[in-house]
Image 1 (cartoon, one colour):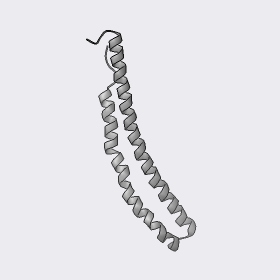
Image 2: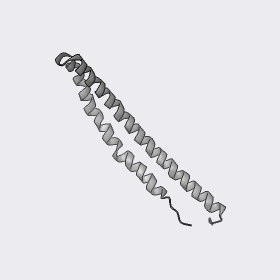
Image 3: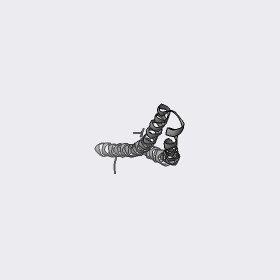
Image 4: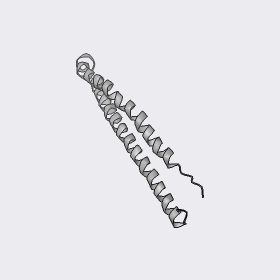
Length: 101
């Protein structure tokens, strides 16, 4: 019987996503803080609807980046759990068919 599911690959995929994607999303936080500070000045230099649209857009993007980072952390945990389930299933099948020791 050959194994079709590579649990180590799946675990590493989740870890790589968290290690390489999450920091990029979190790094936008500093830039978005600076952009949020611009909000106050806009209300005196541009029309009210334009300033309000900028404020709402900045706020939405800030929340979206934080939410996306958390989702990618959850993806890592879910992939790890999936890999563990497959390892457990393989072990149970091997035991049931007498392939373990």
